[in-house]
Length: 110
Image 1 (cartoon, rainbow, N blue to C red):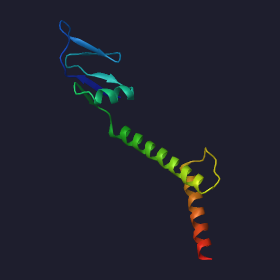
Image 2 (cartoon, one colour):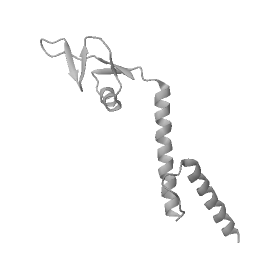
Image 3 (cartoon, rainbow, N blue to C red):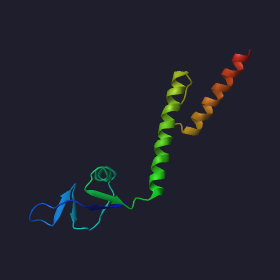
């Protein structure tokens, strides 16, 4: 969860503004949990996003990297015609790739 503050001007005659279902008043922070909304607020110069912990960002980054590696391994194994199950995890796919590379090196020696 992160807190978001609005730093822009308010419409004439109003002391608040509503965006994505959140109401911003004066210099008060609003708690936002929706990642899509946080991304939109972060990209808007009139909003300040703070309070998102480094742990959350690290976990998201690790998850994204693992997904990317999984996809890359699946593509590599498919290109080499190595059979695998689509639900196998990164560790099993790494092992299959290592086995293939070891067998290929052995075949090159002969």
